[in-house]
Length: 237
Ligand code: URA
Image (cartoon, rainbow, N blue to C red; front, side):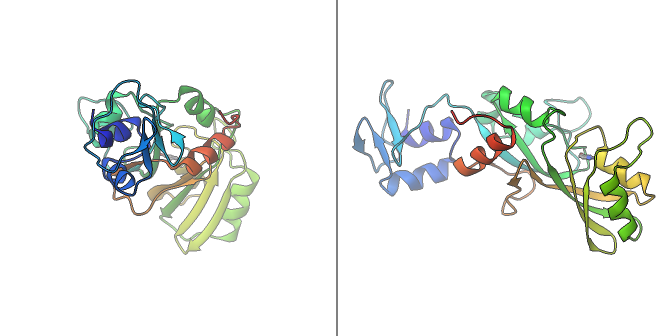
């Protein structure tokens, strides 16, 4: 297999990034610097980038800028799903979304093959923070900040305390540590200011890369993976 394909298959780099790393002389194959991305890698050859071993079957950690109008599901008979936007290589390797975003909700959606991390990030027990940008119908007030902070009564349950930062009359950043069905929409509904648009900006300390266009995906950096693992209270491997 070509070296650039090997690196892209490993999931830490896009094919373009892999080619740039190889040309920059940062990649060793079987102990020697290789500067040609088309060089073939044989089974058993060790591949290193900046001294770190790259395994082709390593876990995948990705972020997608989820577009509107797309379901967070593997497939659906009637609507497009996020699978249509995930590069086939990642789909084939079994990368799954970490939690869900509603069809109309945009922004950060993390995918991984790491089942343990996925489970921990979505477990209600751990209460990993998620931040959203919400535009609402109505004018937000200081009393709403207090209501979010206190914990809103949503009928079937009381939401855990959340942080509301008013940015404009009808726009706010909201941080919640739960992920119940339609949670954020229901919270704004409860204060009589329904959500018009909702975009997830961050999860577990990892921010949406705003250079990604809706529908685009990129591998998480090593720092982003470490941040997520910390949020999930996982030991470093
Ligand atoms: N809250 C919602 O209401 N919808 C989402 O997709 C995520 C959080």
